[in-house]
Amino acid sequence: MAIKNKKGMFFTFMSILLVTALMLAFSSDVYITSKNRIPVIKLRIKTADNYLKSLEGAYLKRALYVSSYSAMESLTPYINQTTGLLIEETELNIKFKEAVLNGTIDGSSLDNMQDNTFIYRLEEMEEISQNTLHIATNFNKGYENINTIIFQDETTVPWQVAVNLTLDFSVDAEIALWNKTDDVSIIFSIRDFKET
Amino acid sequence: MKKKAYFFTLDAFIATGVIAIGIVLVLFAGTNRPYEMQTASLSQNLMDTVSSIKVYEISDNKYVYELVEKGDITNPENTILEQIGEFCYRDMNDTASNFTETIFPGIIPKEYNFQLLIKDSDIIKFNYIKLKDIGTLRNTSRAVTSSKNIIFGLSGSTMWGPYIAEVRTWQ
Image 1 (cartoon, each protein chain N blue to C red):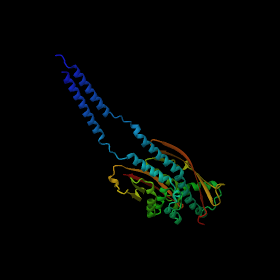
Image 2: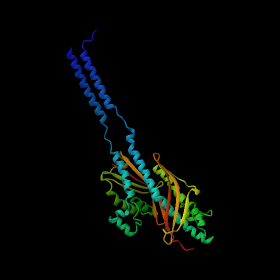
Image 3: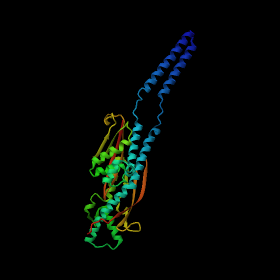
Image 4: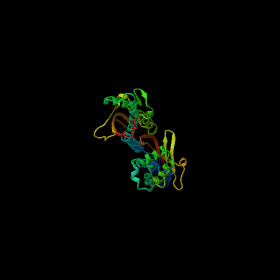
């Protein structure tokens, strides 16, 4: 039996095609996932960068200041009571480093260095940065890997001492990684130390 | 016979139009979303602001000036957030609240609610909430964002912190 209405079939077929095209046009959504993620990545890197600046610019200095101040406060009476004046600068630096990092002198614990050592401050920051910002901070806390020196020079006025400390650490924000070696310098006054 | 084809085709076009309108209505019906990006940006921007502006930069404020004169603010180089943290460390929570009340309304849009939390590990040392005039409780809002920062400072020869500062904003 011949198909009589070929034009009708043609128009109907065109209509079906049109409907299909319209349905495809409204249903096909192209998701550009990387574009959606860009603001999140930017924010993450900004947070990590701000954290690093705060760590280098303030935290390490303040931690060194406080631990050095307390260490020196403890070292002074110790020297007076035990060995007398330390003649060699090297010996002073050895004892000072032990007090600042470990809170001990010749293996004996110092009361005012409890939870106040430089190493303790580093461990605190490692923990809080991981728990709060999900940024992994790793300080190279090995005793031999941290160099400290206490001295006086033309930058220190009378009754002031300077401390330099060199420290390696890394900051890993998962999408960005920083490996740093920092020289931390502070100056503090010993004028208010108690006479012993 | 030709007339039948025309009718069928016309019917198909009408049907197409009805289907298209239906699809448009279905797809665009549920697009009433809260302003998530704006709220998220506000939270981060607020945190950046209070973490960078120093106390001496706002010392023309009468209350801040009084605090400096009284000696409650010992280091004008502190940032706003550090200063609040120091007040918490020194158990001056009322001063911290008044300080926050004075500074923050000027930098938060009136359409937003906000909360400032300062925590020492899991212990909340400071909790300040500011609701807009017809405020929405945070737990009923559809878009709540927060930004966190770590704060610390010196008080004399003692170091306080690190504390966790968190700013939450919602509509």
